Image (cartoon, rainbow, N blue to C red; front, side, top):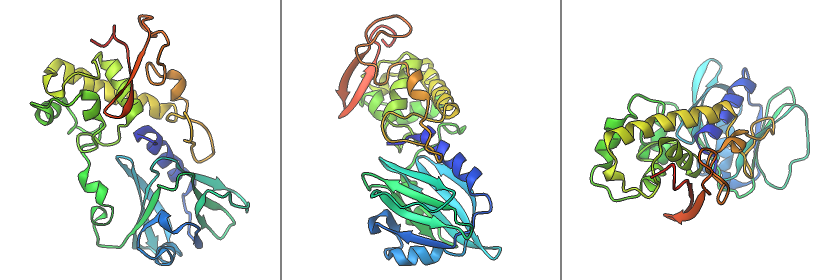
Length: 281
């Protein structure tokens, strides 16, 4: 599933590409791709004739402001889920079998939403309605990793007394928004923390290192355009480059880049987990 760096990479691409983009027509090829309104045709009508404004990201969600004739026209929300991706086409091309939504402007350009597993979703949020009232997952998100609210004191308060392994805690979107399996493993390596460590046993020095590692790892990945191990592509179809820079993720059995100890891999909380038993203890 795309994590924060991949979603941020998509946001940046959408913001650059859709400057002045006015929706002429929308075609929903798979009804389940639209979560709200319940009628996909209503979603099409809501977007048609609107100009797409600035994009913002909250966790793994994307939100764009819409206007019509200079007046607010609601917001357009997107979650890529496991395999969703946007494609930008300069000219008409026959859609592939995994195309779910097609959005055209009057110049013949198309923004296409392709989703192999078909878990991705879109929402239209009416004017005057809070996005979290329609996109329910927004209300359950913790602070953004780059915000001042995400700090060692916050982590200490939230994790106090918890026996949950710190790897599992980092995957909880209610603790911190946007981190998934890749960046939980990478951040714990950068902080020198064993992923099995009960969350409540981490001291302030460790929590400080962890907070700083999360920010550093995510920032590096955004700079590399995210990570591609299978499906992720940016708007132009380009792979993310962070995968080749990973310290532990998907490197089970390979020598640690720091100490040459073989990287360990096991399932923790149902997720593949990678760590160095020498550097993370």
